[in-house]
Image 1 (tube, rainbow, N blue to C red):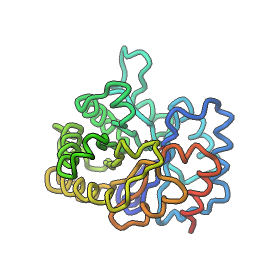
Image 2 (image 1 turned 90 degrees about the horizontal axis):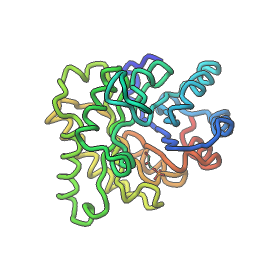
Image 3 (image 1 turned 135 degrees about the vertical axis):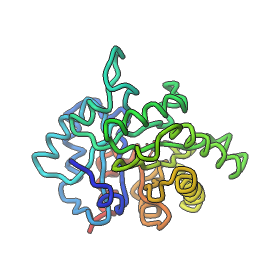
Length: 264
Ligand code: 13P
């Protein structure tokens, strides 16, 4: 699907990060059934699914067949377009099997797979080079949050500056950069940030992107324990441009309930 930024960036983006689930391809169809009678307000919302990369071609084929207006995202990409990098998957490869976006710098990869700001930066460049939209994840751990908002902002600024280091402003032309603010203490804990807390950081991110990078219109999402009960608090908030949903999106019932809140 070719994305024209002006069309899509006006919509709230609700992206479902399936992480390393489900184990079997057969379970994908069950999850996709949740979309069948969802009647999503596609004038307001763009929906994206980020499945494990092995399922991308299969889901892309299903979407193609049923003409689903749903975007696809990789959860990661290599920093090279091809090469001797056993086990890696490049942004081009993802793009060629139907991905529209790449999630880059998720905290689980930073924490458990050793991704530094430098690696994240190389991956952002690789994804943009392949003309994938980028969903860049940033977010502070609980120790940082406990030190107060000034320290949180400093932490987030370092992550953004690291991720966007030495990217020419012209590189953003025609390629969408979204940021997902995902405080680590809210991920998988059932303790979502309040919309007010989220907006405080999101507004700060918006100001950095505008002032330091000349990007005034990036969509900035919230992620961390978003579920059917709280999703509207985030996605209907004027200061928040959507949500990145993890655990709740690989639970059929919960996914269905979330989609119901996005109906037209
Ligand atoms: P949860 O929604 O499970 O907290 O995960 C959030 C997340 O990591 C999305 O990328």
